Image (cartoon, rainbow, N blue to C red; front, side, top):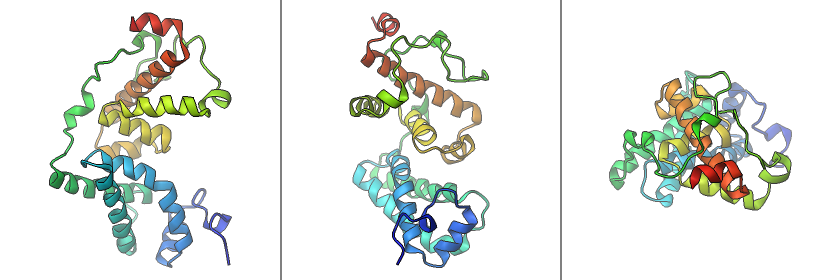
Length: 224
């Protein structure tokens, strides 16, 4: 008997056609891997439109059931992941209406009211090196040493939670879940330009919070 996690049941590196064939043949191990890998992002998407985490979890569960039931009719007009995530969004929006907690699109562009890093320190969203530093922070930690530390992870998580809904969704899908820009635009109904702007703002806010945490002198001057 194969164990979950063997190469045969791994999701990474497998084509959509291979995964779809496996799901249609009833490969429960591969399905379990998909649930493990995709559910966190699905939960974040659902949470944008429903009142509670419990409602979001229900949406994700119902979406997986719907995806399994509909896999035979999947026509491949989008990637499998985009198709599954679209099911989540549709169900979450329907559930959100019932919960009377639909997030207005305009919330994507509201300011969170907090201090930000001076925008002149970053390349603009339409520049080739979008979201990169022009003037990097002085005590910027190395990814290997600091970003894996529990305390740093807590700062990042807290920063993400304080972002406006659409900014949080974009940065989570791009930087946490690894979706391609085109996928994010499709899922969130954004133009490429708006997607870049939201990502730029979200990354700037997270960098600001990390700079404050690590005591960057330049950031302290901005926030005073």
